[in-house]
Length: 268
Length: 268
Image (cartoon, rainbow over all chains, first blue to last red; front, top):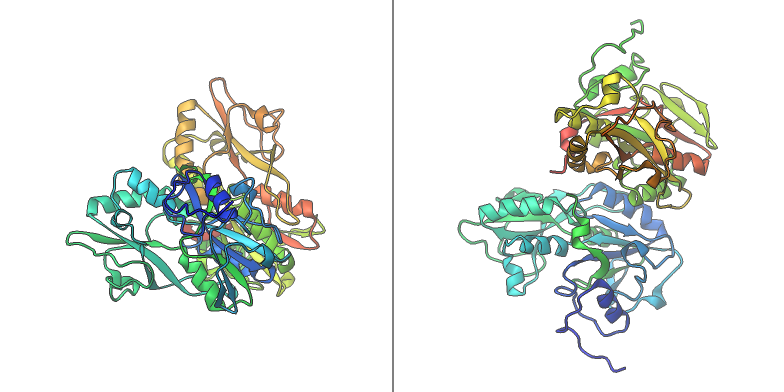
């Protein structure tokens, strides 16, 4: 029963990833595991904040594409996996108190409360898989880097306590590949969908494209266009700005992996 | 300043329809007016029920495609029209008390409360326009009939107080036109999107296709398939079943007409 490091081992389904996380055998990021399965951002807030957060997601569907919302006090999201339990199935969590990071546990069972509501939000891992499947290269993936993320000057639509700037991911493409990337991601509205911008970064308030606010830098080569998608960091930033008494998220890159296949999210 | 009957007069934009309703010059259905503009179902509930209703819509996006949600106590939905006011801009409302129809006023200003939340929900008028624009005939429209609607044996996903069967609209098509209708409506996820079923009506609990539960009957000719879409009557039925102390909807066919164009809702 000793813990074994399976970071290098293939976990091929959502269920296998969740079991490994639940058993304490996976504490690391989920990128590369179960590549055909939908991975989700997780946000857990008290019921007192849940209406505002649900409304924030409704008003900002590109950065906050909701996949499922639990009943109040319910840690299961059967729509995403019959056995799925948000208290145990994420490799690493972040616990926030008054907007400050308080802990990074690998299990939140002891913190669970009857008034908590769990929100699973789509993640761009799903559309990256579709882009690569179409033969369009993604340089940050080939390098093993994290995607570059930027705060923009685009304000999200506020809802109650929540507001803040749109955060975007950026991927550089040759023009013909940028067209293909628009087409492909348009089919996935539940995982951020079509880009929000392409070309001139300064038009959305990004002063230095070589210095992302989060993730790894990536060069935009001569003849390439930067293409920008709404990012799942946006809702986390909006919640942190509201400094709620208590909330729990996944740790960056340590996603909730579901039983949904990426292709099931395709709209056409 | 006498009231004039403009039922037969063309109102070509959403703004013109709203002004006519606001001025008391339009009390009738909005079908045929402002055909390029998005028309919406309206549901107004107290804040105490708003979380459950918002969650019901999130869990049932095909029958309940949310276009906009007001702030609490706010009667404007600027996203749908700068001047839009849900208290005055619908030709005729229905006021419900404990699930029973209490009144059908043409203005609800005197009933407005600081705790009310307005939900605008997409309507199939938008995709019908797109189907006809593609040269595919819609027999009920050509006849001037209301679309045929049926309760099904498909249960919606419950949320708090709200639950109930999926209600569908049915339109008969020749097979090639059914394929086109699937393609066209897939582009409009915010107005019910792709069909939920086609072919055998009994498979979704419809015993007699010639006798709709709402709207006008329509024959399915030899060689045609019935095609079924999720319907905006579904959320009204779920709310009525919950018998809330107080809520307000539009009267059937008397929609909230917005400044959005149908094509703006197209996903591709």
